[in-house]
Length: 292
Image (spheres, rainbow, N blue to C red):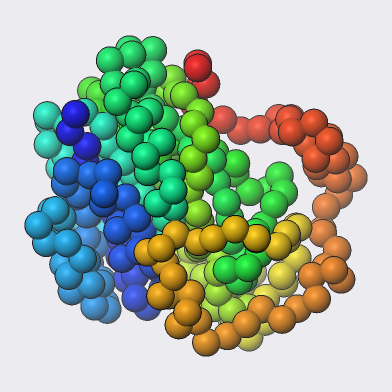
């Protein structure tokens, strides 16, 4: 069974993406790893090249900055990385530059890949998500945060990244997936309020015009932390690969979260209550079909 990891990245340092940790978190599962390395203005190239030269293969790319509808450029760059994967690869592991998988889940993931390798009904494995927010100590938990995504998929003809690279499809069909009990730790929102405001501005440049950004997201030193809807204390451990980054953090999130009232309308509050009581997320968007 051959396993290849892949990702895309650009300006990881200036945007504070833990891409080093992201790649290293899944390397133990991979025979090789492909990185679509975008045209960066910082030292991202040197960083990526230093991670694991014996396993990592770099594809240098130029981002099409004119693609501003629906974050298409993210899907385009994901597809570039996927296209460079060796044809004899059985499973592909996708990790984005602000994600990590805890080492405690790696044995389970490998076992699931082995057991489902020859099952034609299973085209991908669906992983659960933990979204960290503002601090490594808090999780954002509400309907506005996606619960699951495809991150492990078979090397099948026609698979491509969908919309803004949050999922995959075969042509226009949803993938048939198996949900497994493993989590992706998403760190993209672990930043100071000022940095979060900058993140939102930077992120929206791939979706909106500059005029829209200046009118709707003016530069400021604060950020509305209610954006999370609801925060809960994280009481477990983080992946080993990100421990040094956590120790080097030079700021703290010191807001009193007990005074943070979620900005939910009646419908969202009602649906959230149902989910809290039953575990069922009504009207959830699913870019996949769970078959097992």
